[in-house]
Image (cartoon, rainbow, N blue to C red):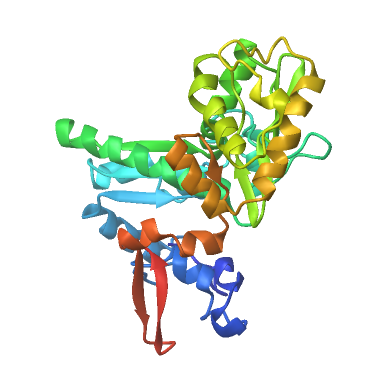
Length: 332
């Protein structure tokens, strides 16, 4: 990977080991560079370019994220590298791809989320769109899709012997995250709105509910889905004395969210909100599994670290860091 003379900027991103701000103790850097090896190489120098081409001769992949045209100007673009190694697969990851009117535009994480269409549905309707997470999740989506493209190119090479360039647009990768909501919006199933309060017809339904120790995701539905998921929740609430007569009297098979006034949905939501506030995420998940309800706890990072499922699958691994004199827990 490429680093400047002062090291990669990611080395300056926390958290840091024991909160000591030091480029050699960035846990962020450690996490994203595990199992990697590096060399010192100036690809803008003649010697560096020659060394780079020697590495390409025996390589399967070249992964780069320079601006479009940069590698070509150095004589290290795909057309040059395929002459060195006809089977080389060059994976180019950029904000908007190698072509098009935006190809030379720069895009930090928040721009990629916004231009990819993913920011608009997130959050509540009474405020501005929300950025997804703190660090560069859009770029991680780009990396994920780059892996898929690289493996497809590898499969092609195994059949034909030919390499190719994989052109990854982070904007397009982000758009893939929105396929579900976009499909509903473009077909007129509902007006595309914030996920926390999804609109169906003339009503707005809450999907994110506070509970005793956080939040859960659940939404009511009618018809066959209502019989399968809405009715069992109401029965569970009734067992605990939390369902009022109005809620118990609903025929979920004929309940049509596109034909009811907002006031009706508010009457449904009021006892439901009180019920959720009475329970923890773990209790609601246990009950949802028992009743076969589509209800999901919204896990925090601490919740994920304490997941019995991930622990049972040995997802976490201890990696030795001799320079720190300790081991650090990594996701597997």
